[in-house]
Length: 270
Image (cartoon, rainbow, N blue to C red; front, side):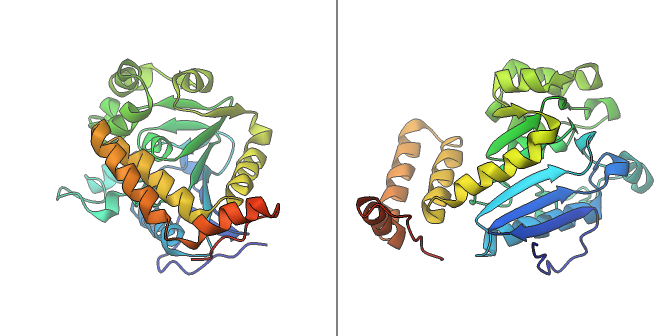
């Protein structure tokens, strides 16, 4: 059995559970295609905050409820009723930060895509670390169909896809749906599996990550993601700084010692 810590906000449309160091975040509005509304976005932000700050969490898995949809983006019925998206028209604030990367989660995040991904769902997928998908999943960006700009999604997709593929998704809207197989071929998806095997594969991968030094993984993740924002020389300098920083951490001494003694390493808890 897992535990659900108090996140300080209602878990509307979201399931959050920590099981043996693995935080499982499930988008849970299957009757609405797991679409995001204001309450769900706030809950998701609170969940990422807990993943980032809770020492009991070492790895996170993000997925959707049901077999049809991972996340179909913003709930258009709620947008139509309100006449705006929940953050309003002001400057960029934390309220719109629904992805792991935007929330500065440096612990590994596995995204298990269980069905259709549309709109803002692409943001969640593209800014996870490892993406696995059921072979029936699909990817489409319908922003332009409803008169909206594909902004965060387009930027995130351009990091993981060739530019032409990102443009086709962003500009063609519902006229184009990228299959899971094509997403795998282009690098948006890292591994394909059957729908029945998806949850098990995500847990297996998470358990593999639990064997590694949490601190070393966090710094490695920062090196990789940060390198996308700068030139090669600056990225190399940042990497060297991370390497030297880790020399002072207990895990740096523990890893080689455990290897030499042929035993499992005992990683630092903090």
